[in-house]
Structure formats: structure tokens, C-alpha cells
Length: 156
Image (cartoon, rainbow, N blue to C red):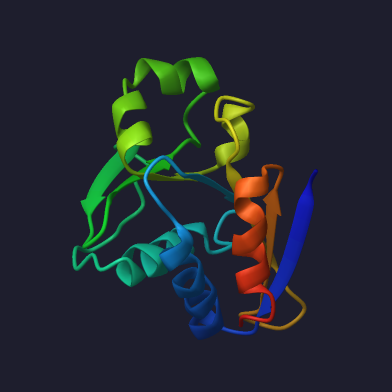
């Protein structure tokens, strides 16, 4: 059963509110795949989400390092930029499976990894009609995410 929830964020503050509303529902072993055009707000969303989890570190894009790990008050966060990866095989060779299992994984350009992960939450950020507006579509195929999407309805 695939379920989509589309939210409209009229500015960065609204995008941050959506990320903050998602944060308390995430747990170790969860994988969130983020996609969208360049500058659509993937790293901004991750930054807001990691801050909502209690991390005080500066969250930056791991474009050149591929991965960063952040400690939060509740669980470690693996932040990956898969833009330069050619697919799931490249991700596997990074040797990050232990971090994926023990923490929260936030993966930008997640669609490049295909079906590598079981039951991820997919988030697509697209430019909206107005300046600074984003359309944020959350897609879930696993029942685990249904109550999370229920909780996020109307947030922004």
C-alpha cells in the first residue's frame, strides 16, 4: 500500500516546522530518502530535522565527503549525499550498514540507491508557485509510516 502526503511550505520556517514535526516519530533503523532538484531544500530539511532531534553541531552537505554522522539527544544520525554514488553497490562499499541499523539514516539523492533499503520514507522537495515556496511530498509503502503521515497532516 503506497501512501502519499503532500504539504506546502510557504517559506523556510514552514519547511523547518515540517521537519521538526517529523523528528519525534523517527527511530533507530529508519531510513529517509530525500530527493528533489538542486537547491530544492534537501540539506535545509536535514539541518532542521537534525536540530529538532537535539543536535547542536553545524549540519552541512556531505557532497564531497559522502557521509556525516551527527549525535543527537536521542539517536545517531547518518547523513549521506548519494549524488556521486552510481547506485546501491557504491553505497554498500562505503560500509555504513552498521550505522544504518543503529541510527537514523537521512539520504539525499536517495532515488539513486534504488531498492537498497527496506521500507524507507521518501520525501520529495519541489519548488512551489511562489518564491520560497516548497511542495513537500512524503511517500510511504510500509505500514510503519502510516501513523507518521497521519500525524503530519496539516503541518506547515
